[in-house]
Image 1 (cartoon, one colour):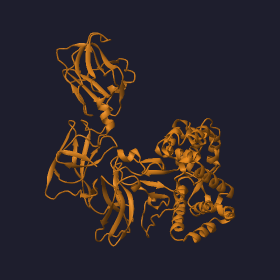
Image 2 (cartoon, one colour):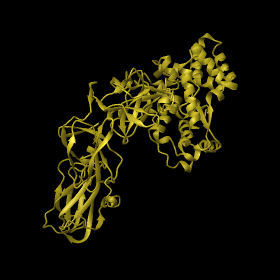
Image 3 (spheres, helix red, strand yellow):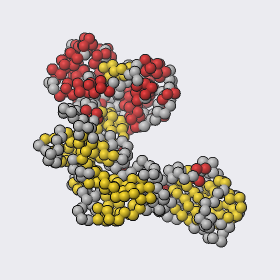
Image 4 (cartoon, rainbow, N blue to C red):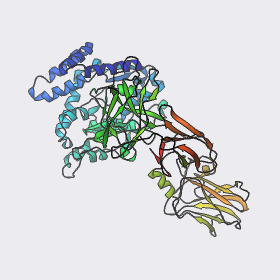
Amino acid sequence: MKKYFIYIGIGCFMLSGCFQRNTRLEAVLKYSGDNRKELEKVISHYSQNPADSLKLQAAMFLIENMPGHYTFTSKALDVYYAKVDTVSHVPYSAKKLMQIVPYNYPEFRQDLQIQEDVKYITADFLIYNIDIAFRQWETLPWNSGLDFETFKEALLPYRVANEPLDYWRDSIAYFQKKLELSTHYYEDCRYSAKFLDYKFYIYNNIGKIPDERLHNFKLDCIPTSQYFLFTHRIIGIPSFMDFIPHFANRNGRHYWAAVLDSKYKSLKVIQADLYRTAKIYRQTYAHQPAVVPGRHEYVPTFFRNPFYKDVTREYLPTTDITIRIPRGTKVRHAYLAVFNDLTWKPITCAEVSGRKAHFPDMGRDVAYLPVYYNEEEELLPLGEPFYLANDGSIQSLKTLPDSTTTLKLRRKYPNSNTHDYWSKSLNLSRFETSNEAVFNKADTIYTIEKQVTLSYQYVYPDSTLKRRYWRFACNPRQTAYLSQLAFYDENGERLNGKLIGPDSKQGSELLGDDPVFFCMIKNWVGMDFGKEVRVSKIRFLPRNDGNTIFEGNDYELFYYQYPKGWISLGMQTAEKEELVYPDVPAGGLYWLRNLTTGQEERIFIAKGNKIVFL
């Protein structure tokens, strides 16, 4: 199936790139085979009346770009779709999402077949979709400023993904009352398309997937965005599926349904503001110029997809970048890569011309590495990494010759505002001790009066105190996020006892060694040691991401040097919450790895004594 999919993608490129408009339509009609009469019926239907000239253009747009759009079919899917039909009390857009959930599961992928739209779609279905899309465009007040070219991508398409084709766009009943009110009061209430999107926000109404084989399905940003696109098309809100394939300073990626709103001059998505972004792409219905591999050349599937369009400049300030290809390097396509999920990942592709490759509209405040693929499909560097600053200037990340520095490292991944919230949640929490389990008479050992770091924290009680009960009590005005809690005797041995207090049930793992576990303390949690004990040290850990330096974990530091790549500066077993690496080549790009545990690690530079994650 994978080879067949790639074949369709290449065919799409040929249709979009090698034919003029009239010959492209004829090529699609020829390719449609026995289904040609259905497509010609649509064209004929809209050719009768001059008033339908725009609908005729819309029909031609859909037909000319139809190759490459398809539905998955199989007997297993037919059985599953019947289960979806039995789901009640959810909008039909939720059922459309349910239909495409199984496509990535091995239990369903084995017998999948591809049913190409161009060879199976009916005239009645296409006419129905065109008419309903035009009715939305012409009658809904929030579409009054929508031009025809944008309409063709934002409202007209009859499908969102590879779902079965049915008359889903007339399933308006679930939204009808709210839609009528919104339409009636649109001007009086100063509504906008974005505001209406919030009004129809029904995230919790997606429902349970009706197949136990899909029990581990997670409603992350991709299916959520698909669900909203189905909903938007039913309601008539123009929108696209936009996405960041790889964040440039974090692991992960993000997809969203971007609402088009004439009352806003620019698009905006919070993830592109929170995290650095190199590229933002849009999923389209129309064919886009895709990369054509040379003979024996490997090009990743992403860049051969003819339905992705670069829209970075619609969201972010950008800069064009041109790189020079080293002499002796035979390469047809070059890439710029960002560091994501512990590796370099290509984010954009350009054809090499005259030993140069030009990359337009690159996101700023990002570290890039120029790369290419050899015939063995290995990703290799084309030069040193560099940093594109906020002002558009380019800064080399090459190590300085004959210059060294000392690095003191306390984290392997950047902090975030969420981390600050976790640590601040402990402010004004206190440690107390008593010989009464209810702590009516208690001695306060220590009060946390300022924000702590996300590393292990220590409290040293008065050695003369000898009590049976010891506790951590939060500020009554806020919930404290705590990961670990331990008490030690005068010999440094950990004291064992029984966990007590109103938060003891959910706090049982506070006594474990997992730094990422956390408990929300709303009152207090403590220890009953069964007898009076002296506590010489209390160790506690705020909720954290596991990315600080932990005693006993093994670490390895690297720096980048072209063309060798990452070069090790040696391994260390942490003896405290800080690693010290002397005589490190200065001015370069570094990467600290935890060889014991964890998945989040970021590249960084050193500015004086400050570590700056990129």
